[in-house]
Amino acid sequence: MWAFYNGRTQARGKREGRRRQSHTEMAHRLLVRRIWTLSVKDLRCLPASTSSFSTSLRSSTTPLSLLSPKRTLPRSLPHTSRREVSFNVQDHEDFTERVINSELPVLIDFHAQWCGPCKILGPRLEKAVAKQKGKVAMAKVDIDDHTDLAIEYGVSAVPTVIAMRGGDVIDQFVGIKDDEALDSFVSKLVGQ
Image (cartoon, rainbow, N blue to C red; front, side, top):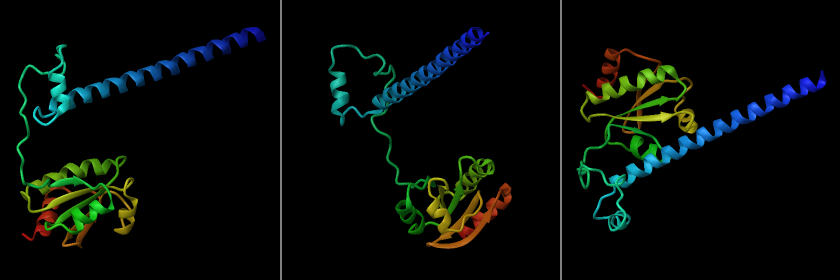
């Protein structure tokens, strides 16, 4: 009896070991594929005139069909002076520079990746801000990454949206609002 049980246990252990190994191999393959895809895209986007790396690739004697697309890509993207209307806050210094010292009124969306209502409200807020055509900016603050900012502004639940003008808090709300209420909230911030 014991030999049968011990043999079954060893077989199960071997199966689990193979399963773990296959998961590890699959993760490794996905990682390599993602890195390869990103590196090929990055090399395609390098400007031809400024990169010595892309020049050395072009002077190579072996053809690199994967790295040189059939169609021609623009050498550089057109530069626009328009500021991004919506942005992710990187750190406290970035928050101070782009939100508190902003010339535009700013909506601050305190959210979290795990928050279902945040995923619904975010696109609606961006749509309401876009309707203002550059008269207001939107800062997105992930409370898990920037707990200090959430505590500083008294955020106890997400989503929390704070309207700020000239570094001063004008208004705020917690939870989801419909599109009409969001448009009204943003218009009030702009002063219309």
